[in-house]
Length: 163
Image 1 (cartoon, one colour):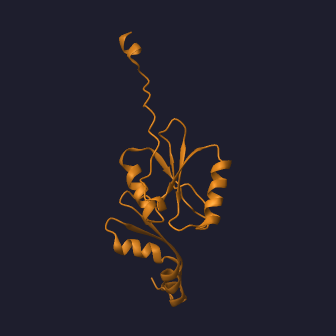
Image 2 (tube, rainbow, N blue to C red; image 1 turned 180 degrees about the vertical axis):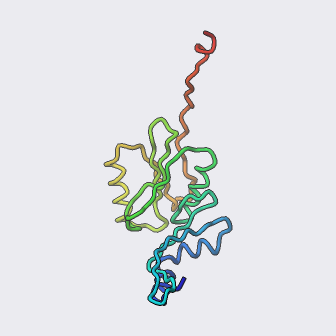
Image 3 (cartoon, one colour; image 1 turned 30 degrees about the vertical axis):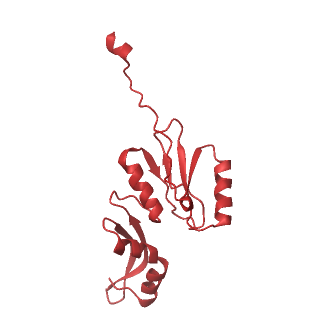
């Protein structure tokens, strides 16, 4: 596939963080989604391209903190991974939604830098949500305290087993 100079420069600029994660971390995968055209001479040429980093479990992540959260949750929790799709990087989104708690719990990551507009938007999203929420302030240096998983309820209780 041919890649024109403009698109190559755009990849280096727009996806610099994804490329850095891929090159600097073992076990990181880089997904490439692309459309291509056939030129008038019949040569395949990339038209559009997007890159996404995923961890060893093929869960997408945007930064080192989300990667850590994915690893921690993947060990023994049930969750849904939040994905940005058509949202901007500045838009607030829950990184994960715990589904093994009594009530679903959204997990938000407060960014490294003090970004007041983002924090205000995150607080507004949390306040208007009906979900329980946990915010991991990565600036605090503290480990994220996850709510405990709910007890697993089985269909059969001791009473059923004795009848």
